Image (cartoon, rainbow, N blue to C red; front, side):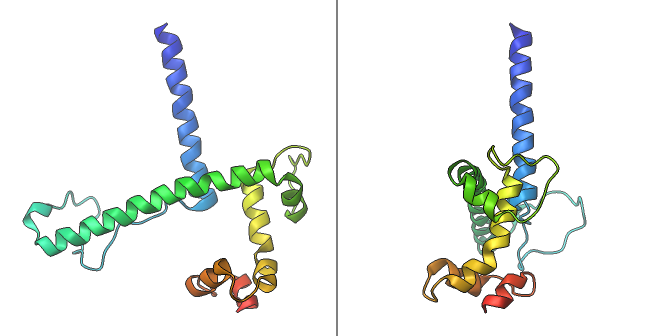
Length: 157
């Protein structure tokens, strides 16, 4: 019985590790760096900060930063499920929008998260050019994204 429990727990660990890897590489979920302008420079591996010795204002800033970090991770976990939902609910549309080729492609089955991400990335210019100017997502993308890093935004701007 213990052996079965150990095997089951190991399988859960494998699923969790794959999930984290997918979230990092497909969406960049866990690529958040904890840093603030108010922080003092520290050597790599320099140990812990002793917040009880810091000012109340500094501790408030650290709590605010930790809240932002937690929200980023939570939103990333939600966002990680969206490509899976799209892969199951919009099968034909995604394969139609996927403008590449993969050796292991099976258009009869649901696409992977990477295929979904590539299809969405490929249709971004069409969305930005075709959406009305008062569309909330279009306004948000154009206001907050860096056009130098995303050529699709240069077309729509």
